[in-house]
Length: 135
Ligand code: CMP
Image (tube, rainbow, N blue to C red):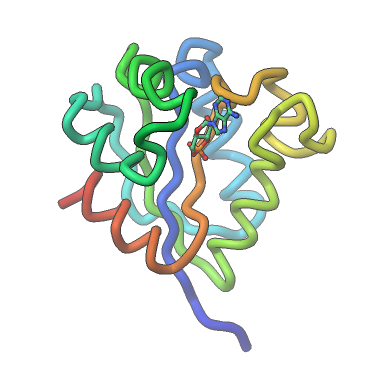
């Protein structure tokens, strides 16, 4: 028996624009992860900067903030055994061009910046990110 974890998933603005909300939620549910919270929202630049604080100074940081605030996104909290690693595996590699077929990024994007989904990378990140999106 493994620990039950919570993780934060975003369907980023490109995923919403591509009409992938149902597809992404469905994949996670079919895998056996439980949707605890789900909300469509437009992210303020302040919250985007909080989320991506670790990337300040990197060349992709300014376009990342512009992109993540460019339209509505869907934030959700998923729960299940090993939810953090399971969800990340289902999302695939950050650079969608390198992501395996069968993963969300591998199937629905070819970019590394507009890559459909975000998935927390650790228990600490999950706690921090859930509080940014859901208070
Ligand atoms: P995400 O999982 O949301 O976390 C940080 C994001 O920065 C990442 O997904 C990508 O969208 C983006 N990112 C990471 N590395 C690069 C890169 N080299 N070029 C452009 N965007 C990047």
